[in-house]
Image 1 (spheres, rainbow, N blue to C red):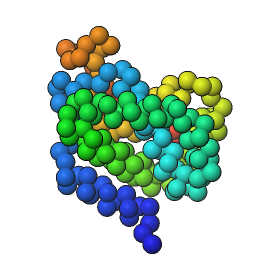
Image 2 (image 1 turned 45 degrees about the vertical axis):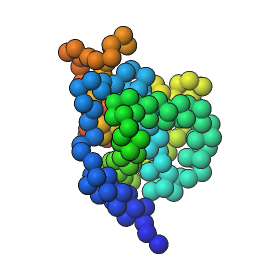
Image 3 (image 1 turned 180 degrees about the vertical axis):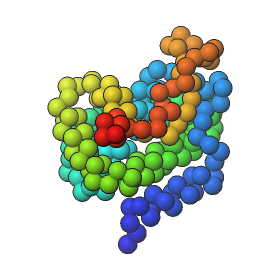
Length: 180
């Protein structure tokens, strides 16, 4: 039986070999709701990797059941971004993004060791205490690694002019920054 890490490594190699870097072209800026959706997808991916790697599947299943509507909305919003930016290749690019997201979280789990599992328990506990509608903010505040770069559009723009880089270009999580 293949390990979770082996499966992720294989998917990652396939994603990297079959696509250019995960970056949106110039007119493909991130609308604020899309950025929020990508951050929530990153949180869900981090918790999924934590569930499998730290044997916290029951907590993950409870999390998904509780936030099914918000997670589903984030999925569709994120997929919509890739369809808007990449047209007919949008679905494939979204799948590559999801694969890279899981790989990034698995690499972080390996790097952090037992701290990752400890933090995953805390994330589950804090998330389950949230009221409806607060999960997106919670995901953004956790500063989870997000392997996607694009400029952030203003809400009234389709194409940014001099907008700042998206928060999506993070390289450290809040939990690991606190340990430093």
